[in-house]
Amino acid sequence: MTLMTTDAMPADPTPRDAMTTDAMTTEPEPRGPEPVPSDPEPLPRDPVPAEPEPDEPGPAPVEPPGTEPGVHPATEPPD
Image 1 (cartoon, rainbow, N blue to C red):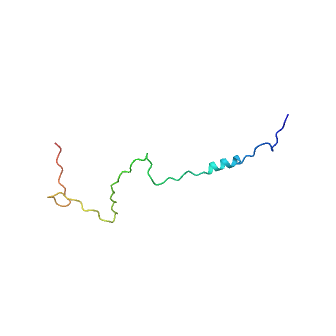
Image 2: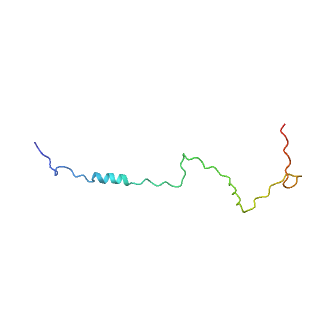
Image 3: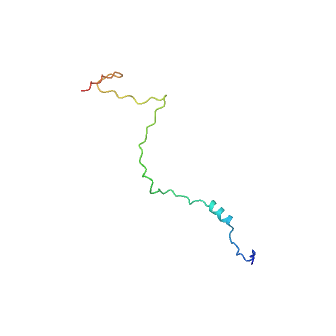
């Protein structure tokens, strides 16, 4: 029976612990600002007017022609 000694074994140039540590600490490549093909096109948004503050007067209400301010004519009944 022949026993092998460590002298006969080939040396491992990189320890296994070093390989797993490097693989775990590798950060993914950073993504640039370019759009991803699967992202939908951004839709343009209409600007929303801000609500007036309580202490600011709002726009004057539009009165229908031929009426006195503050008096609104009765609505016509539906057909």
